[in-house]
Image 1 (cartoon, rainbow, N blue to C red):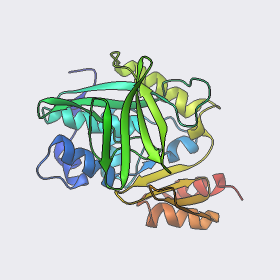
Image 2: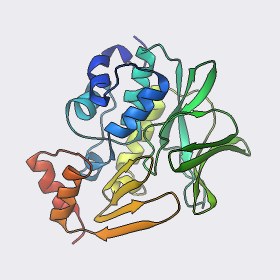
Image 3: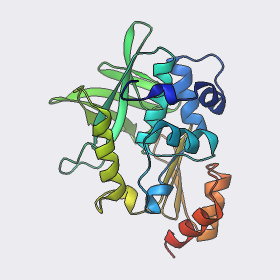
Image 4: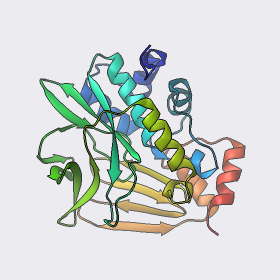
Amino acid sequence: MSEWAVDELDLAAYLHKIGVTEPSLRSVHAAHVRSIPFENVDVLLGATPSLDLPSIQAKLVARNRGGYCYEHNLLYTAALDRLGIPVQRFTARPRVGGGPARPKTHMMAIAEADGREWLTDVGWGGGCLLEPMPFEEGTMRQGAWTFRLTRIEEQWVLQSLTEGEWVDLYGFTTERQYACDFAAANFYVANSPDSPFAQRLIVQTTTPEHRQTLVGNELTMAEPGGRAEKRTLTADEVLDVLTGTFGIELTDAERDQVEAAIPA
């Protein structure tokens, strides 16, 4: 068994979950983004998400839950492996907002299909790619969103076009990574007081036309041109939005804990 334990994935259940009958790199990526939200409920409630495939599958496939980057991309890349699509997993350094260098706390991947390499990432919580992007310098329009992959010093940097300006999302190199690298990063992200995911609720979905983000009790509907509508929610409204807008189903105990964690 490989270190990624991809044989533990129920591929049929995963493809059924995301509604794919003719799997390819592009179709699986796009369907995953449509079907499974980004969310950090477990971390907010003090748990470190398990990264073994059965646990991820039980949460993201069997339950109507989402997860953050490690859960999304470990599930997704396991499916690519099982489909015979060559894929390599890498860590990335978030660059949103500039400032001093931050730890490599994001997971993304490079896959091979149709005779070329593709950047593919279904787990970026700041508005992920809607489909794979050629792994080469250049821009790509995806729906109403525009992304650019460029080189800055020794890193590849993914950027998005926001209000007419290129905004850095994250940077990465193609140094080989191992499962233990993601386990260490996962523990840090879930437990460090410096981690934004340990401090507040973060939920996000992206479509070709808009992005919906819930941070704490603030719900934002954003468009690529920069237009955004924001609403401050009550705790009851947050719970309603989690279920009705994002499709996240919580147990009664989880609902009580989330409600207690929402700002008054």
